Structures are given as structure tokens and as C-alpha cells.
Image (tube, rainbow, N blue to C red):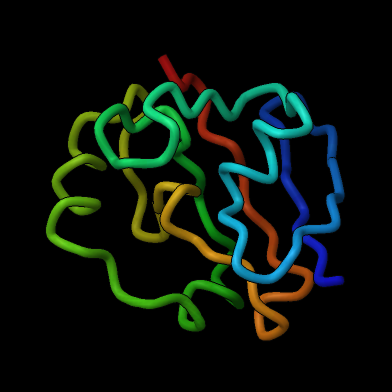
Length: 107
């Protein structure tokens, strides 16, 4: 099973096995990972699953949709070039080892 690595604002690192087809947001909230809130359940209406994707993996992701791009303008932490909503990052074998930094703050 592919792994995702979540880097917390305090420097901690959490590595999770994530089933193919599962969003990084659902993987995190399903295991009660601190920092990923996901208030809206993954429908891009809250922007509380903001992460910054490591540059090595950013190019492997599908482009942001217009909706995701707009929601990133409303995140509590200012967006960065590799900012994404983790509800829109769907795990695949190609993303094995993906590293994402959890935005601080989310709310």
C-alpha cells in the first residue's frame, strides 16, 4: 500500500498507509491526524485541509480545478505555490512516499 508522509507544523512527521483511490484528507481524518480538519468532508467548501506538497511530487498531481484554486484564496494560512487541498489529492502508486506539510493554521 502506498504511503503518505504528513509534516506537522511542530516538526513531527506522521507516515500513513493510504489505499489507492483515497484522498489524503480522508486518510488523515479517518485516523484523527492532528492538523487536517476537513470540516466539509471533502467537497471543497471549507479549505480546512490545506497542505503544501513537496516539490518532487507537485508535478505528479492533476492541475487544480477552478474551484480548488478559488478555495485556496480563503485558507487561514497564505497559499504557497504548491498549496493544495488534501481532499483533492487522491492516492495512487505513483504518489507513494508523497510528502505534504500541514498548513498552520487551518482555521
